[in-house]
Image 1 (cartoon, protein in one colour):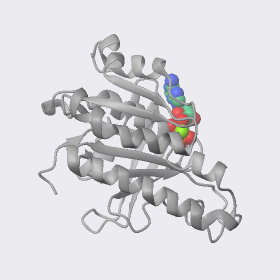
Image 2 (cartoon, rainbow, N blue to C red; image 1 turned 180 degrees about the vertical axis):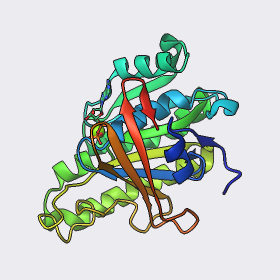
Image 3 (cartoon, helix red, strand yellow; image 1 turned 120 degrees about the horizontal axis):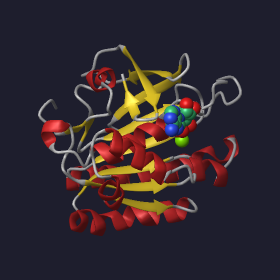
Length: 238
Ligand code: ADP
Ligand code: MG
């Protein structure tokens, strides 16, 4: 595992927690409450994947599948500038796709097989993987079909990660009130979509001010520890 290429998050603490950074050939799930930093980390990775390997990147481009409309080009500009990268180039190297519903999201994932080899892609972001599925199949009565569809989507992404040597990062918003959604593994706190699928699950929590706490869940090859990082104007930092 240690030999797999990795993308730096911008935070040494977070990279160390992850065994060096975000891994290719792997799905990494970022889960946590609103404002915990999931989207900001995705933006940072879309910039950092473009760095040369000696600086923590893959010298490759990113595909950003945005399901919630929270992607901001201004953040890409700011993060690129902060690490001395040309902001226009950084933006050109991110293929932005807005997924309007879950079928569209899955159709885009299907198309990745053609896009990735042509476009020198090293990172696929799905922010968020769960939003459309939850909105379209709400409540516990739809849990089975929702989970079934999500699993199919996850398998699409897993085969892409393996086939094309890309890192796949997905986000999953979970509530801070576990009791409210008890019994729903896609919503409950501590619950995550990569339930029985291989991959790395990272739980994010708010701390004081711009501080955030990350914890890797259920990864036998990584230490059971926490990392503190910050969300700044420049991006993800220690
Ligand atoms: P999530 O996707 O988990 O809901 P985000 O990644 O969107 O959360 O994180 C939102 C937080 O990021 C905000 O609360 C804010 O503190 C921080 N943030 C966003 N933009 C900036 C910025 N330009 N400068 C500093 N912090 C920012
Ligand atoms: Mg978000």
